Image (tube, rainbow, N blue to C red; front, side, top):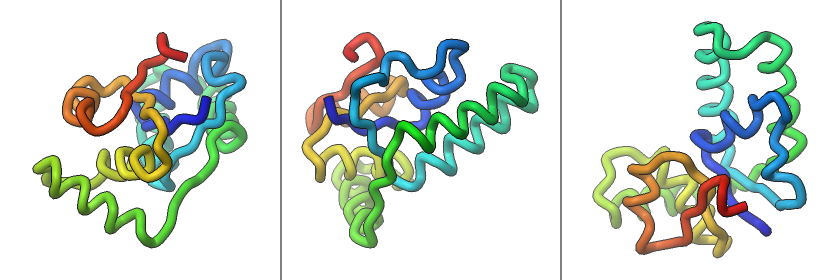
Length: 130
């Protein structure tokens, strides 16, 4: 299955002791924003002592190996349109939604608020759906 992943789903997927087994066999994509959000959250988890330095390094490598970048100049405008349509003040989550909409793919997220906000626009999945 092809799918878009957001940072809320990527962090636990890539920091689990077994790696991202649920993503095996799937073509996973994300906007460039994913790498910034993922790195920020991973660094915070390291500082809190929730992951080791070794796990953090492996997670960064795994993200790069498993997830393909999808970013175009038009993505930012498309995210703006999505945020406007949904009444959102910020466009961060709208980037994931824009990629999923433009590619006709489901969005893998653990963010319940995001899932509820876009369930009428696209298919939202969780790890159990893989």
